[in-house]
Length: 248
Image 1 (cartoon, helix red, strand yellow):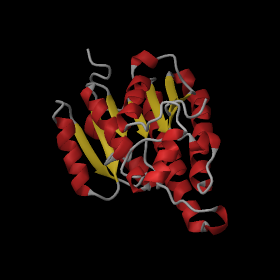
Image 2 (image 1 turned 90 degrees about the vertical axis):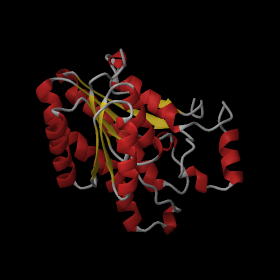
Image 3 (image 1 turned 30 degrees about the vertical axis):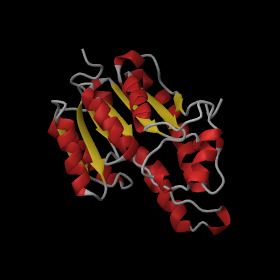
């Protein structure tokens, strides 16, 4: 039997990269998949077709999770369309990198709202459904940068560190209702975002990793499948690093 057979999952920010890999891996493990995207309708439609090839129901929603009203409407629509919700993966995120002295207030607010406030929005909006059914698995995608920091990313690091504190608090608040909340902290994962970096920077990253290579989006997706499944039934409030040993 597949690990997520007949589970209903929602993955935010799934049109590309890690979110797309998670949605595909969930579908391959038997989950019905709802996902969000923000801009590219074409990417959203293409992903629906890919997921449906696994023989599962899939629907893409154009939604901005940084706005609470949008998040609330999204959760209600997913529950209505699929008949429930078992798994929530908060993956939506952006970067607006710059040194602190040059960082605009706009870029600070934009990253905090998209990366951190969106997690509050979707978890709050879905908590009533999870509490009513007395079960649920919440997985928040943070980053190793949220653990160790990174120069030029004070906004991003703060948002990802905030996700860790939020995750642990939710695990404490909702655990009595059999609702688990964990986080995954990816390290250097090779995505469209990292393709924009120059080769010298990429090589420096690889040299700093004990396994001497970058990770693939599927590496994070497999960790998400585990945390979402019944195999992780007694794991909550944890941060799982998928980083090749970068932080030890």
